[in-house]
Length: 313
Image (cartoon, rainbow, N blue to C red; front, side):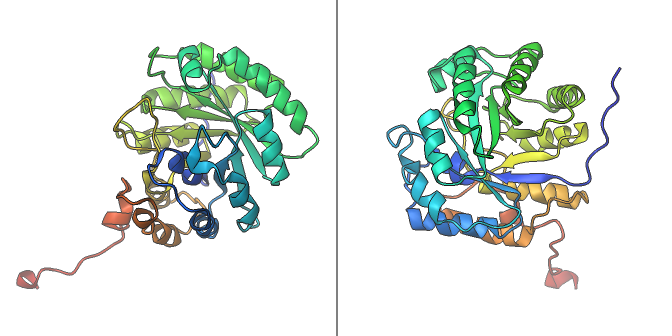
């Protein structure tokens, strides 16, 4: 029986709000505002920033300025800039903008793949092989995000054996990193810990990232379970922006500042300046035109202290 890995003392936080967060917003954020926002995020110590998606402007109008954004943002040493690409054309556009990392996406379940991508998992794998061939001499890191890893909104449970089979196929293709995605917030901590231990024991040299949504309020609990299993890389979205169209009314991704606050409170090094991150988070309501679900930006850090009421002094 394999032994659990020790809890890591350091983690990496990947910010996905500029892509995952903005793509479903009602308001289009102007290009210059996006650039200023991403530049501010880059200065906080985040390890990666998923800045945009090179998809069809008709499919995601909010990210129609992908090339303009990617070409204008500041590049910080130690901060990789990532872009999601849906196909070969998107890959070529991303490579032309000198991205550090390309993020591919596929579904673990057939139903979600057909609805969200118009492809079965097998068709996605075929397309990935072509994308890898196109990008093989670029030196760009290729990551694949596996949606519905922890459950499908149409089919329900996705068997762990099926997830492991798809991961094995991705690694055999030459994919360098894999993100396990809880697409509509169906995961629970016991399930997360079990799968994370399984993949880390089977593929210890593959960088695995966990991507949680807070749809049912378990985002931080699931992140904690993944960390306890030995995971060191986490996606998160500033303010908790994002969400999935198949979970109407739900909150978005696990909130970056809340995740950083949790880890730092536990003594786990995130490399992120939480005060700087909170300062950027306070600008979100004006940027997108509505309040956001993040908690720490409203309540303050746990180290915050209050004056005693006058009657008790």
